[in-house]
Length: 335
Ligand code: ASP
Image 1 (cartoon, protein in one colour):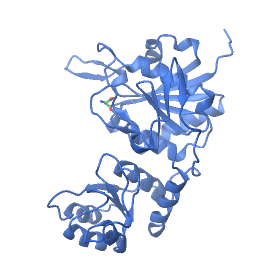
Image 2: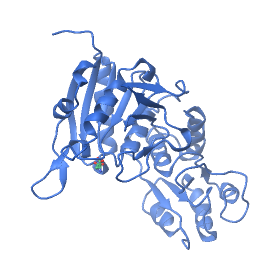
Image 3: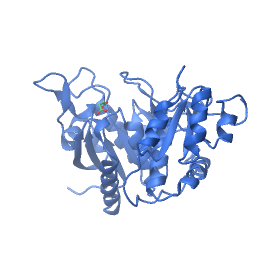
Image 4: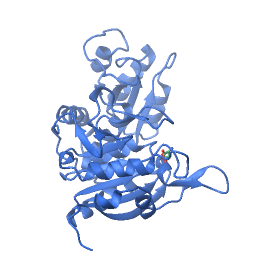
């Protein structure tokens, strides 16, 4: 029967939210989007749902091509009148999918990602509540124009800041320094600030996805892995450096050699905080690495810097312009 409820298109991609016990042991993805939608009490009173299963994968096995297919599906749903989009997927790479899709999302309609920390048949399964909260967020007028959002544990996060900060807790997601966007109160997201500025969407990829490596720096490490990655065809290196963007003397030497050929970004391996640019001057510190041709990642985590660099190179940005493009993007996407 026709009604005036908003339309929300829901797609499932797999993950714990869709997982039930297997005869082989452990939980595996089995539930489809329609089954997930049925599991959330009251959801049909909020929106007319169009449920579709696009993938049935653990989230580490999602690919950039999968996400581009999801993006095309979501765009088609908007063209066909959806007021909001909800995607369910595994939480392990939820922040990556959210950030990646946000780079390309050009519609004011909310694109909301959610998942679960407990399997569908576990005591206290959080999937149904998360899905309900995601739909409540997707239909809310205050969610419009905020790009891609993540809703977990009755909290709304922006793709720019969200991170999985705990491996197993139902409160696993955090927005670190940027702060959460909203909390759901009695089924409505209460936003703490208006939508921020958003850079223009990154143009769609022109060819194959470039390989971009994240290389951790650690005590006693000379950066050999970074050179190995470059020798094996990686188009750019993201260093998850110590502190505010620091590596060993030997690693600094390698960065000078690498940065002469490919874009090298320095991010922090610390759980929060930005890289510095003009505090430390010793060999291997940020001022030295900048002199050697590296770019500082600022507030971007290594994971998110990698996705941004992948998207920029795939869009055809020349290697010598990638650093500038990253820094322009960051200036425009503070919130
Ligand atoms: N543990 C994961 C989840 O929360 C599995 C995955 O990411 O697919 O869904």
